[in-house]
Each structure stands twice: as C-alpha cells, then as structure tokens.
Image (cartoon, rainbow, N blue to C red):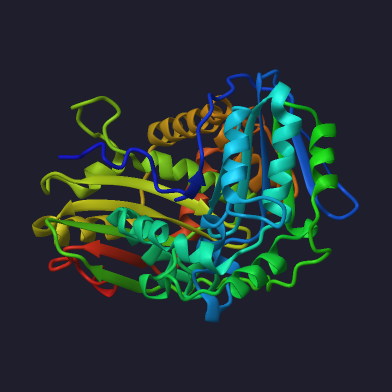
Length: 437
C-alpha cells in the first residue's frame, strides 16, 4: 500500500533563516536579463505585483567549502541578518518589521540566496538594509556563539528522508557536491568567525553573483547590483565533482527505513536533465487522490509489501546530477522493497501514458512557481548562475512539451548504465547493501 508522504520529491532541500513571510504574486510576465561588465547577471520580471521580491544569489553553497572547513556554508547562511559593520541584527530586524518587509537566507549545494520581500512604496528603504546585510557582513565571535543553539536545532529537526538524501550525495560524490548541506554536530561552535569571513570573502563576489527582481523592472535590478560593495574577485575553487557511486548508512533506530537510491543524472540546463525530470515525475509520487490507490510504475514495481512511501526525483547541478527514488518503508519490509526499487532503477520501463502524465505534472510544478514569488525568484537566480540564461516558467513549460518519449527513454538508458549509489537512515536491520541489489 502506497502513501502520499513523499508526494513532493526531495529535489532540493533548502535550509532557511527568515524573519517573516509575505503573500505571493500570481501573474506571469516576460523575463528580461543581461550581464553587467563586472560579470554580475541581473534579471527582472515586471509582473505588476504589489510586492517586489529581490534575490541576490552567489555561488557559495556547500560544494565550495574547503575540506578543512566543512559546514562553513551552513554557518554563513545561518548568520545572515546578524550584526553588520553599520547596524546591529536587532536594528535590521526592527526596521524591516516597521516597513512590513521580510528577509530570508536559504541555500543548497551550489548557491546561497539572500531574498527580500517588500511592498513597492517601501522597496527603496528595504533595499538599503538588504545591501547592508549582503555587503557588510561582520561575523562577530559572540554572535556566532549565540547562534549555536539555532544550528543545533536545525540539525536535530532534520527528517530522516533529508538525512538519507544528504548521505546519498556523500556516497555519490565524496567531495564537492558530496559535502553535506549541514554542519556536523561535532563541529558546531568550532568554526571561527575568521573562517566564515574568509569563506564569504572568497565566494560573495560580483562574478559569482546573480540578482533577480520579481515585481519590478530591470533598472531596479541594475540599481541593486550597483549598490553592492563586494570583493572584485572570488578565490573559491570551482573544481568539478566526479560521480563515484557508493553507499552510506546511518543507523537511527525506529520502525522505518528511509532509503535514497540513485544513478548519475545530467547537469542543469541540458535536454537530458529535463527528460530525466519528466521521468522522475512519471515514476510516481504517491496517490493523486486522498486515500486513493497508487497505480504509478514505481508503486507497481514495489508491489504489495505493506505500507510505504516512494517518490522519483531528479536533481541537477552545474556539472552533474542524480536521478533516483526516495523510499520510506517499515523495517521488516525493507529488504523486499529496496531490492524491488533497485531492480526497477536498473531497468526502468515507462509507458507513453506514464510519460505524458509525468510531463503534465512537471509543467504544473514549474508553472506553480509563478504563483509563489519566493520560489520563482530563487529559481530564476539559480537558472542564471547555472546556465547564464534565465527563462520564465511559461518558456520552461514549452520546452517540457517538446520532450519526446524517445528523449525520455534515451536519457533513462544513459543514466541507468552508471553505478548505483545509496544513502540510508533509520532502522537498517533489513536494508540490503547496494552491491546486493
């Protein structure tokens, strides 16, 4: 029996530090973008929204961490909004609250996003504080020490599914993309302010930056870029991440086993990546109606092994990717269920109807971002940093329509030739090892 618990695939887990939330915009307009002389990419969508969202994104994710300073990217995004050279954290929070604006910082393995949301009439004032937060960060040792309980809470609150996906990346890539999104509990409090300052100085630079504005024009994005005071060039290493394949397990007890199985996917922006995204949706994400049955190819492959939750996922990075399945299953049923998923990943079979359904579900997800401003602005920033080209959700939906059944079949064939990787967390007593699949 399949569950809806994993209906939303774990494509990207984002850790966030925020002060408030604002209502999303619902309209869609053409994206305008260009690259400034300092190599900063700017983009804008003037969709007539009464709320403007501004995201300043940098190539400063966990993949760029030095191996001697693992976890520093997590500390960096968690410290966003603390005291700067010109204002205290309390003052920033209070002033943004007074004008009804909100600020948040989030991140993934590639990027860190600083996002501001404000009404049109208060935008200019809010941008001054955003500029101050991004350009003048000052990581005071006592504030980083005060931030330790927050880091401990974020680690303690991680779901076992997120832990399994994090372990999957470590097993697949070892370093770079294999670096965890989260600081190790043993390292909490041991990363110095100098280390964070050095990491910020080497990664938060104009050539590694994208600025996206949703709800205003391109001129406003250019003004934001001109106001930033950043080092002229970042020194962070941009090493390619090599897919190795492997396995990592974390025994946590409990009644469930959470297993992420994947093969090497395709880099962001490629046609193969889009085809694999369609395939991930086609695999299945649980029942589409409450209390309904799951007739997806993935559920049929697992069979009647008791209650379970399973979802296909595809995640693409600048130079690599992962395509696979996230599975949660009672520990006693884990052996049969994991082996079934492993066999299915080795020889996936998707009908034309399944692929058509996958395309429709992916288009729904992409177009829904237009109604969720915070998701749209970060998605556009990531596109710009990945490929140098920014496309609207409508343009992406049109590209999805152009994906043929043969494109999906070929992408699956190329992916399944690669060695399988596995990350597992929970009660692993009956979870088979990856070489047994």
